[in-house]
Length: 311
Image 1 (tube, rainbow, N blue to C red):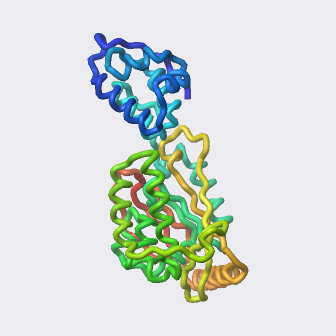
Image 2 (spheres, rainbow, N blue to C red):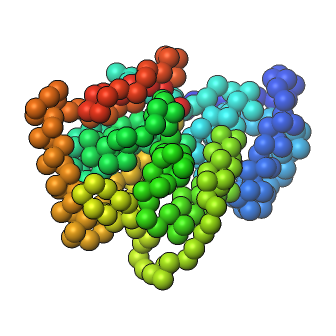
Image 3 (cartoon, rainbow, N blue to C red):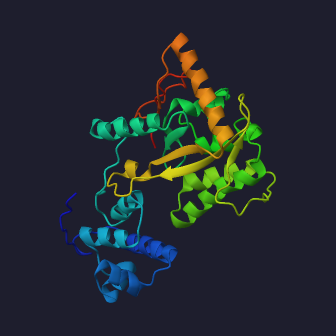
């Protein structure tokens, strides 16, 4: 994306410069960066940056983008900073249903399918489900409708008393890792919706414990299943160079068996699921790609496509 240079002064563009300056200071304080350091990173002088923060000088569009990049802001927050300065957002925000992202969607579905027979899903920054392979039925089968209403929040599904919580054998030691991850994200990138979600999830954790193997490489999710208990570890994958807001916030959560017995039970489950699908309707990838302007569709039956909103 090529960004044109725009220059402006406070007299010719009467936008709320004090608001922009306050927002810039807030991010600089949160990143614990001095004016001098930020000025050096952005290729400007400390004096000019001081004038911008005090509202005495209006930054050009290119300067706002350089400051946002120097603060390592997420693309969504870079757009908001541009709006504070009186400029249009620079980074588009697509949905997985957009034609422009057809190739990306196909690639994601191929990756999810290739991860079978182990669960893998695509979620956004709020933990809302966008895509999932059929093995994720391990988590969603049998859940009550109120947890499966779109958009399905995978974090709520994991910790809610009506969700996976009763089946998580090490809930007291595993659940705090979910909320601690949200706390770290909030410290770096505040978001009111994440704050509300964290507050809700914290209420579901009534006790905490430190497992004997808490210094091991990873804390596995120990889940009771009809095939027997399985132990899963999670890997997270992101788009490192995305210039689209949606893509920058996508996360692929891929679950891997932590031991041989878990791997065998997941393979058995997948075989049983395929046999059921062959005797009835074919099983498809779960999907959740519709634009935010559409009404969310109800959760379908197991194995059908799921369509809903994308935040």
